[in-house]
Image (cartoon, rainbow, N blue to C red; front, side):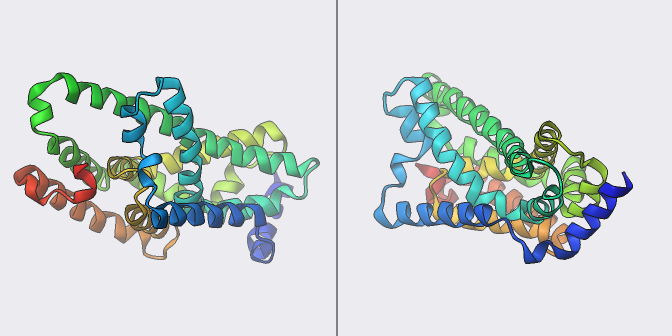
Length: 266
């Protein structure tokens, strides 16, 4: 344990000089693809609503969506988790088969967010089914967007959000507490961090889902919020501000559907 603590402290001190290049490349590639899709006007081909209503079998639509979702994870979630990824990269370099351990850690993290994406997609299939078969809801579709915004705004003030945000904002203590050598342990560590990250950001990602996963502006806005909440020096002060903004926007949408942001209206 003493050796692990020393390794973690050493890693935190010098990891800035050894960033894990593949992770940075993945983030850059994901944003490059998002920008390309936006510039070429092909967002609809990656939108989950289009996949659901396009007549494809459910499993095929889900598979295509999950491929696009990996780019979403890389673009929006990896930047805010980068401090821990960078620190783990340094610490894990001292163990045998370090490459496998690093891949397992990222694999555990991505597995959590992939599972969330699959659940959100299936849930959205249920929402589409309800709208198509419930006349009242089909006449009041703004209730879905307004409720999503209110839910996300309220969650910004929850104790679960606070706890998960504290864990994500302190990568050094987190690693000192949970780091163990071995590929399996690395995967479990990635799962653990992914669950805390999910606990921080699931509601904001639901807003992203409602806006459409290929909406560049919402991607950029929400990714910036999640990054500064977890990495910024005053990130804890940002959460309630964002909560108030989402609650106000949601209340306005519920009170007057004409105020519904166009991206949610489609």
